[in-house]
Image (cartoon, rainbow, N blue to C red):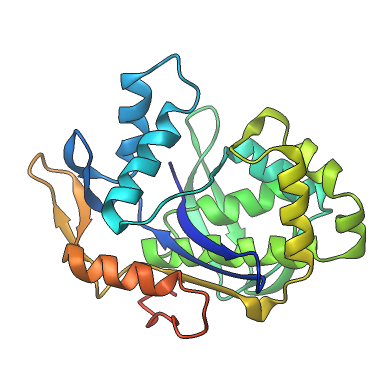
Length: 254
């Protein structure tokens, strides 16, 4: 898993709160022990290679164990699906906060290339948006996750357009097999209609990062994020509240 977002959607008041969790956060994976949170997906796949939902199920079990909350549904999107959705929407508009330069962006044939984004408001197609959220060398990990949240907001804004809502089913189907979700098509369309009735102010997105987390090295020599488990739990649960009193204290990069 490259991007892990825990979100709470209030279907009555039409509010959504979400938090981006660092994939390098060391947590206790049920039945496994301490490891990076994104490793939960691979443990699930390895345990049940013929089960198409085993990886997601292990991530769900890990998150439920960490924060003591039930996960009612999930959406798993691979990179091609992300790009297809952006293109199906006709592109998105993103306000790039500063110049982004990465001279070591990986290519599909395992080489590298140089990418560049000017600062300012600009239109991005699916490929450009994908590069924007994936680039690793231009700034910090916290800043990268903030870019991801900014693109999610841009997708929401574009999805609010009359044209996009009229073609919601086309947008959903455009992702093809690149999206795996527990929501059936009717539920996905219902969620799209809920989103259409929401405004930007109804959405609260934040990131979990420094100073609550600290960079460290695992016992086997890997770079990880670590922190006080109870403090992390309290921050995350506060961040996903939608009752108007759960505004999380911003952390670096959010």
